Amino acid sequence: MTLTLHKPAPADAPPATTGERRGPARSGSVVLRVLTYCGLAALAVAVVYPLCWMALSGLKTNGEIFSDPWGLPAHPDWGTYADAWQQGVLGYLLNSALVTAASVVAVVLVSAWAAYGLTRLAVPCSQPALLLVLGAMMLSPTVALVPLTQLLQALHIYDTYWALIVLYTAFKVPFTTFLIRAYLLGQPVEVEEAALIDGASRWQTFWRVVVPMARPILVSAALLQALFSWNEYAFALVFITDDHLKTLPVGLADLAGRLNSDWPVLFAGLTIAAVPMIVIFLAAQRHFVRGLSEGIGK
Image 1 (cartoon, one colour):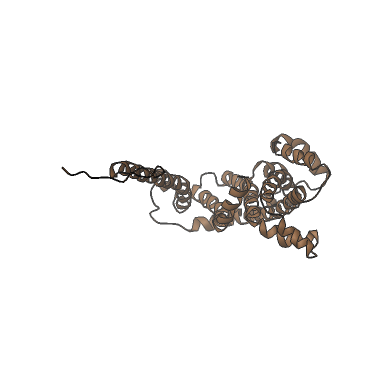
Image 2: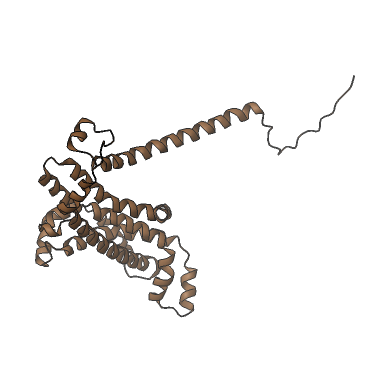
């Protein structure tokens, strides 16, 4: 009879893992990964397919849109895009681009200055000012249409580009200020202090140190403002009556009324209106996601 002695395992040694235990865990991880990929693929299809359908519908005829709405165009007609361009989409596009660019620059500059002052400077009554900013975020723009009309008329900027630029800036500065402030609170102040010790002024520190450090959140704020200004309808409908100053949302609504039943041209106009924002977002998506995750997450 032979006795075999086994060395006892240390008390802190991890328990042995058998193949039977490892198998179900690994298969569960694979199933979860497959379900995640399937969900992301379904979400991508739900987002991309309507855009592709809209673009392809602009290449069809009226008969094809109603007889075979989900099929491909038998003979793609690129002339519908040229017709939409000549129907006034070009003018609406330029108007929207001007208003959007001006409001984006104004919102980012004002919000960045305000956020820098609230986080880095000993501003008197900074806490009440912050509460005022947060309170302004709760104001719905549509409830102020009547007093805003009177105000814009008194300032002699009603039915001008300035009416939309001023309103788009005023109603989005509180949110972007709150966003940029949250981002700056998580950034180290030692770099700014070193710049001040080296002789840089507050102005130079802001432009050469703070702005480069806050680039992701500034890009995020700019994109959010661009999306809002590009798609905003209520202010553009109420405060702009001149056909030559109308932006894309209002202009496309008027175009739909003029075209009556020419759906391919309308779909072509909608596609032209959507392309600029898609291109801008794809170009800046890395900074956009990083800025939001580091700003809102704090």
